[in-house]
Structures are given as C-alpha cells and as structure tokens.
Length: 203
Image 1: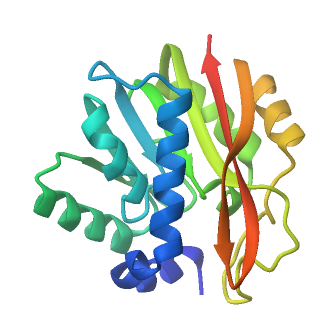
Image 2: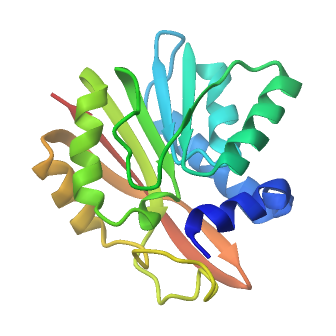
C-alpha cells in the first residue's frame, strides 16, 4: 500500500484518535508561541492531512492553504472547513511533484510530514521558492526514534530526525535565525516520542 492509499483509507476516522488531536493542538500552540501570527499573514500547511493544524491556525492569520497528496485527507478537510465556516484553500499534490505549492507565502508550516518525504533537503530548498523575502517556516516532526512509532504497514522514509541534521538542511537552503525546540511529547501505546519545532527565516 502506498502512503497516499494508506492516508486515503484512514482519512474518515483520522481525527478519532485523541493523540492526533492533542498533538496537532500542541504543535499549533508551539507555532503560535514562536512565530508572531497576525491577520497580515498568508500561510501554507504542507502535508495538511485532515487539517487539524490548518484549522487551529486559520483564525489567527489572513489566509491559509492546505496542500497534501491524499485526496481523502483533503476531502475531509474541505468538509470540516465548510462545517466550521472557515475558508481554506486546498492544493492537491502529486506524490512525486511538490512544485505546485502556490504562494508566495509569509509562513510555511508542517506537522508530522517530513518523515514521509524522501529528500527533505530538496524540500527545504523548494520552500524558499514559495516564500516572500523575510518569510518563515515552522516545521514539526519526530526526533530520531527506534521505528516503533509507525506500524509495519506504513511506508516512511525517516525514523525521525536529528535536530542537527534539520538545522544543517535549513542552513544549506539559505535559511537564517534557525531555532529548534521541543514542541511536545506525543504518546503512543504508552511510549513518549519527542516532537521538535524548527523555525527559520528566509532571506
């Protein structure tokens, strides 16, 4: 099963897992604490899924766009946004093509998506093409873990990341004011997994 197929099948019940809702809320709070959000900002949520972070941030910014490779996830987000009366732009992505991200944006956020991306360094370089000068990124994902976070049926490219590696990739892409901190510790099957938030500014 491809990653997209997995998420399409999971979309309808994704939000029923309390840990996912709590994680998204914690990441959203960490982003709001680190990045000055305002009604002036246009934001992209890369790998938005069902919009748990997208819809948390939406009231705090001028506009927000959700991009994802899973049509099922985007459908669920669209339904939630309509029910809540929250305007959200949606961008369907091909699994091999992330270039059509739109923008430019003042802020690109992402939560628990990077470990599904094969070439994260290339993605960071790509983000720079969709940010306004002075724009920022706020990216949350797992610290390095032992492989127990995902079940065997889930295709992933990384078992989390070292924070030094994330910092290096951001710096090599030309970002500055790079900061990494712990956003939260997410619990799964009785085990805690630290989640970092990396923020940085594009020149």
